[in-house]
Length: 111
Length: 114
Image (cartoon, rainbow over all chains, first blue to last red; front, side, top):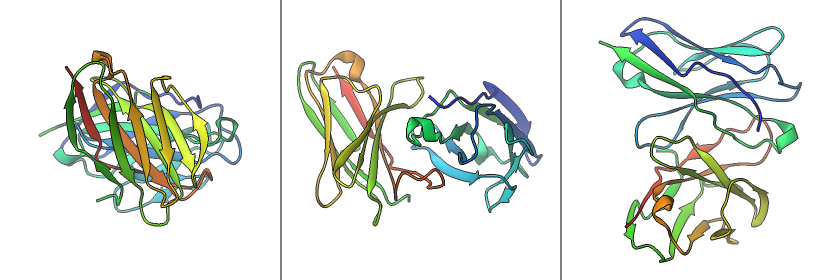
């Protein structure tokens, strides 16, 4: 499986920014970094993805390190609805670009 | 709404029985994935189809099988069911296998084996 490393859990206060880190030291040049989140009893939901440059969308921002061996998902203002498990996925051409989900980071948002 | 439709949403069946889970991918998506998520477990990749043909296999048991039909919908067949097969089964779809393509998940089918 393509390897990513994330903290098991994180906490954030409501309305504060959250930075969720991910390490992917085995990344190769054509591998995209994808982030998904999963609320309890729901299917994973696409958040954002990128290749080299930082990316922004209505949900979040993705900051990719210059060497691409790590990335950070940024939620600019956490809300209670952002409490979920966040998965960082590296689509690895060596494994057929499969989506392998690790254990992710469980984000708790404190009111 | 992701555009991926799964049926049934809930299913309760007895050990030893066989069930079929159905998935309709998003319009235009050629690739279908099946995942299993047991209670407090991560998402386990089972199998992938692309345009009717099996593309990749993950941790799929021999008692399980899948297929993708010409209209691109897919079915996951689970047979000789055991208590441990109780899980949430997700279908997902994407346009193709390129690394930059995003994948969209359905709401899942809850299977309870009693």
